[in-house]
Image (cartoon, rainbow, N blue to C red; front, side, top):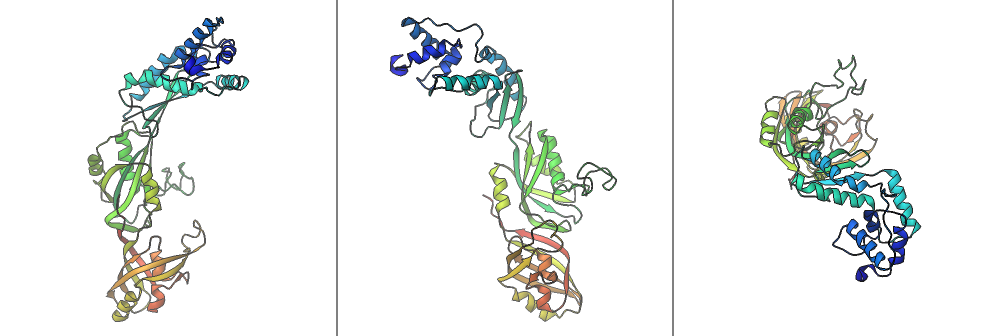
Length: 408
């Protein structure tokens, strides 16, 4: 032991005299020497001390860990049973240790100024994991485990923390009467009341629920969350290739579900459709939310006066790479900061429909309020289509035709 234990024998003798078990004695010098467990290290330390005339034996009941290491097999079996009940590609073991034990260990380390020790939590995590590994048949993953079994060593109770499943795709919304996500009742905030007829929400379903409820059933997860790349108004349709989104399923029992089946089942209705489903990592959520993708819209506009065809076309063409200033619209000022946002109209083209109606197709920066660009919103959006046409106009229907985002 000389080559790795050096001049630590007097210190080891002092620690051993507290009556700690081999695990705890070895752990106090856990960073000295490699290729051995702490209990082996502890036995070797005692043997070396005995050779030097100090026969210091451990007490039958360890005053530090309370013989917790005698229960390693029980902990491992409990953890393996829980982990084997869920689907994952890897796992990790964690522990919750009696606070009094943790404090006693800290006091011992400080009392003897121990600098090469390991914590009891780290040892328990490692040793339980080693015993559980043959029973689980999955690799251990330290950085991004799909399932963590947290062993409460006080009661040998195990709880699972299962990493969410993230499914990316695109959706089309064909209905002008459903929102993108669940919209809790503004009166009861989801509890259920007369206003929402006990449903707890303002609308019967949503783009989120149509696919999320099916995914929840298939994964036997706990809850679903919907992360869209922006959102369209309830009365707007999302056409073309669809809007990118990430569906998050928390605490899934099964994670490798058949996405073709999920897509098929979600597409059986007429309100929305889904395509290009695939599994992604958590990082995709932030990437989608942070994306500032240009968008192409189609709007049907009603005018308050007679519209000249030629002038209509010329006004539309005048919005080529035009910067506009948009103050927070009145319709959303109750939930958005009152700011002036600078946006850009990349191009615009018009099609005359009747004396007082026409269609526009246009491409804009992400975050452009298209309805307000058309109407002017009482001077809050400048310049506006109404201003240049010289007639007050209002969007009657709006469709998103494209979101220009390249998948990675």
